[in-house]
Length: 386
Image 1 (tube, rainbow, N blue to C red):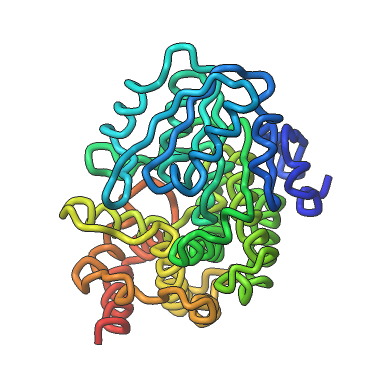
Image 2 (cartoon, rainbow, N blue to C red):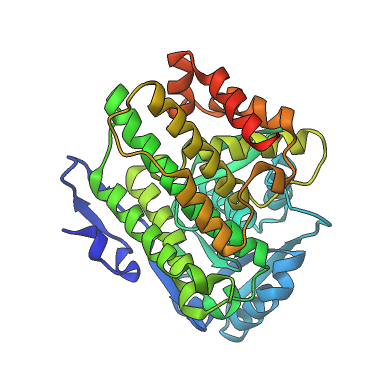
């Protein structure tokens, strides 16, 4: 089976034996990416009666009210909870506790209406309470919609928890195309991060013998390339470009599910982004959308790959930082740490310490083991903070 040629809507309930020696499976029952796809929600929810809808004060206005009214008209028993926040909603213990308290005991299915944070919270509650959940996406801003992991802020540290597939993913392009421009930038940045995350995965396979799957890597690469091919239409909010972006994000999540962790989609660029976010949260400061930080992180890690490869040939194809930078420039998205408010000291320390975010082999850890990480950190920092 050539998984790279299968259409996204046919990746539901998919199971196949792969040339890598493993059996891959997707537990998602329904995926709908099209204009007006919100109308499919009642059909997907036919096996259920009692629905708990979760929104925040922004997504409630964008789509939440519409979803609640639609489900009530179709005869579902609907309860809902709306998170209220003046800034970013943080997926932490407080938010999880709030959701648990509001969750009705007779809930058959949870419907999250939102993007990253709402999805992560609903997924974790779904996992812990053994209640299926559906996500109605409101922005093409991140690749976690179809994955099985929930990144959460626990005790002021960003931790990634294994959880469950969504029962269904609904991505209505009529809604997604009107998302704030920064969220479109974030979605593209998250996809662009695969340039370095896939390289990290391959590097780890070569050096440490970590499991690697060519098929899943090719699947993610195909999704990324389709998104790049439609780059010019993203900031113009062209329907086909927005569709290619959200499909790439969902495919990336499906790939994570196939592997059972975030390895195909998250490498050193994500570790930098997490480090910057945790620094901001620890100081009570606002931070950028995760995908915007990932995009910048991918440029930085590409530069690190170049420096390490000069010191010791890595024997693999390495990312071209100019290529990554140019794509962000064409989109109009931030491409340097300065543009997203990262101070010189935080930036320098992030290169040295971001690898401790999680025990995953990346170019950061390899450079550290070679004894050249500090020198590389100084070089890259001086490039940006002249």
